[in-house]
Length: 415
Image (tube, rainbow, N blue to C red):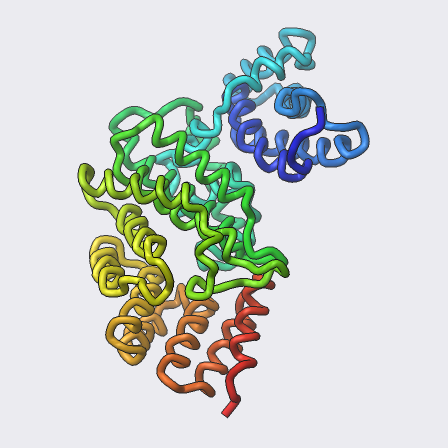
């Protein structure tokens, strides 16, 4: 049966489900990830020639299990749980048959995999990095950029995280209730990062990766079904819906970036906006306030404005001031500076932006110069704005963002 989506997209969708199923069966996260990657590679090579199997998940689980079984056979001196897994896998002669894969494929263990990656033995940064790699399918380079650290640092972090999970003997099951709140905070941050990478890709020729935003929204919906009274889960889902609703207007037919103020709002997804507004309205009235709810409220103010001129910037500024008090970070400050400029003038925004100059996490981040260019342009300083836009264009690895920023610079005089 031919899938409705390209093979590459299908494999991206299936990857975390396959890894979850194999980890549940064999319990060895590091070895399972290697085996699943080999199965995905085999599919990428074989399926274009032979066609996609009727049950692609079952096929991938079977192939990954075979790879892992071969490894377990060669490591008979390993710990007892690995020997037990090998014995179970070899019960039918050593090679899982098609029925094994089909049965295992019926369950989607993606959420349990998310929680495993957020094991308390890991640091918060390692939890997020490992989950982005294992569940989100992001490269080490993309994760490093999301964390504003060198790629080599991130590669070491992911490697150490896998070793820690293995040493901790982590079980592939839902965590105890006492641990769940902390684990969920990490999971929500993971989903937020996956969504952000999909909404604005950090590198490559495409502005957006709809497969990642869709996966982040799907997983967040699943979390909300499990915990319908959690205000931050509802807030994150609302934020994703309200932001993703603009996706169709964020680029022109040639794939060029269109900024929020210039987007054709008739192209926005009104159903997603209505769902997001209803979600955030309901959770703000009933749940303790959290950062995802505040960000969703800001997105709702933008989406409910009839046009850019009608945006209630005073309300947005008040929300950013509250957000910066309860969850301060450089990206919040960056957006706060824009809101401040829209209400009190570009000089105020530039003053706040200058506080990030000493923040090492933002030293080479292109968004600081992009915002600085925008505010300098508002302030009537075209030469300085042009220079800032040019620096931003040089620092981003997203080709659409490079072209957009270079275009903004080219419209301004150099002196």
